[in-house]
Length: 117
Image (tube, rainbow, N blue to C red; front, side, top):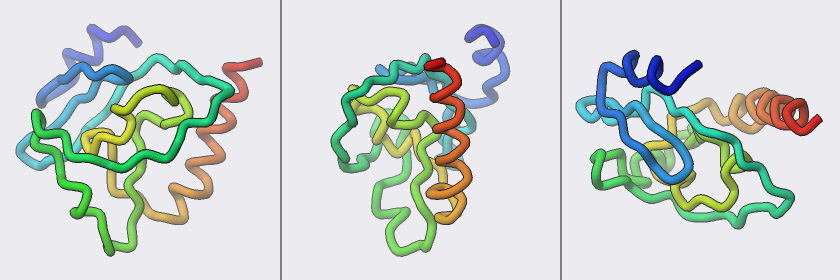
């Protein structure tokens, strides 16, 4: 899908980041979608701290604390390991913990391994 088509399907704010493009609903403070070009590396990324993206007024990191849910990456860290942007809360969605750490992770890994093949 071309980036032009994605941009025309965003009913909110489109913002370019180092690692991804995000369609962000500033009124409801949530990402609708992200688009990225995977740049996987054999070097594992260090765990970084989530941080609020002030430009888009994304949710603060504390909004996800003690909710029983995970911050699910829309653009997976493993696809953009060198980017600090992967840990912006504009790249996070509230996600069921079991799904995020289980089936979604498996799916992302399968897609990554197929691209590498």
